[in-house]
Length: 490
View 1 (tube, rainbow, N blue to C red):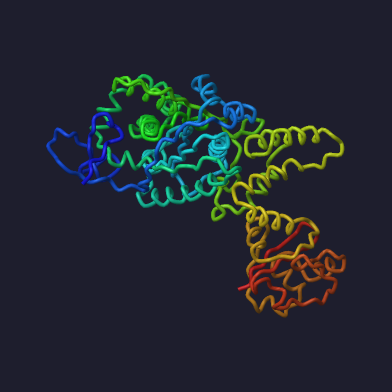
View 2 (view 1 turned 120 degrees about the horizontal axis):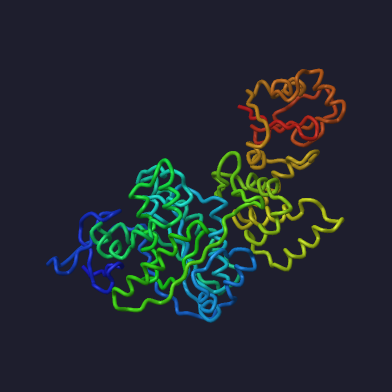
């Protein structure tokens, strides 16, 4: 078998042998052990990535992020100098705590894509290993431990989502994104090797000083040793990615600053140990998504605003952005969450001060651009169709996909087929609870306020037919402009 160099000890030529690693089924041993061959650990991906030759950046990425409100902290002003004359790989980590990402995670994806637009190679790091530990940052209690199968499912689901979002190109020469999983190197690393080669260079005082650690130590639940070591694992991710893939920058939300700087510090310390001066590496954070009153923004009453249609329909995300974005926040969100040119956003900001401005124009633009990026043109079309279907007095032709998209946003009822087909409309309205009695139903019809699938009904004697059922199973009733009822026929 061919010899494979351990990423952690690349200058020492350590090799892999069957055994137990921290997260996997292989272990590291030194050549002095007398063993002459080995097997490699099972990895989610065997992708081998070469370091890209640096080129001339298209734009100054630091300036771009600063102008769009996407820059919180940078570990050194030298990053902007570097970014003006060369390109480099940059990475952002995504832990698999669920089988999707949410609106708050979208900022990391947007920032990675801005780096790509400016000519830098985006690297999305899946936390197959760190997800087994749990990041204490911003958490008041330890995360529940997920099963191995659950974590692997989450990793695959998130990678599929990231591949779809980061593969979108605004021009032909944009660098292709790279997708890695830190279980590929941690899964084969034994605990003793980690302690000797990484833990030895970590200062406990510095680790205790991190905000994520101090806040948990002061809490009632405290912090476990497992979570305490998270920053070392994330720090070594940076070491590995710098050595193996040439990554010079790690990005993350402002709550990740401590973990990110742990990585830059570890790169410096391990480089000094090897007797080699490592290249200067940088940390960059972006602000968390908050409203103008300082509250965390991006969660609905039903929980997280997921970025996959299976967990949250494009319509529901569209409605959240439309209804929960204030005039005070919308321009800032347009700069942060979309790729619209700044001159267009600034022109819209000026228009908002004019008497001719139509309310919610900016909010609609924000919702459309976010849905277009996250769900594509098809998802946007579905969201707009569903929105139009719920508009008071709408006369839009309906289909099953549109009705299913609005299912959670309008009252609903389930009736047997014999309760609907060939039955008086007034009786069905009472059966669904849309009207209290037949007399009220007739008055509503007489006043022109009743619609079946957005078609106005004028006869008080109207009976529903099989043809009224969309795909033979759905019916949308309306009594007045705002009172609607989605009926499922079984």
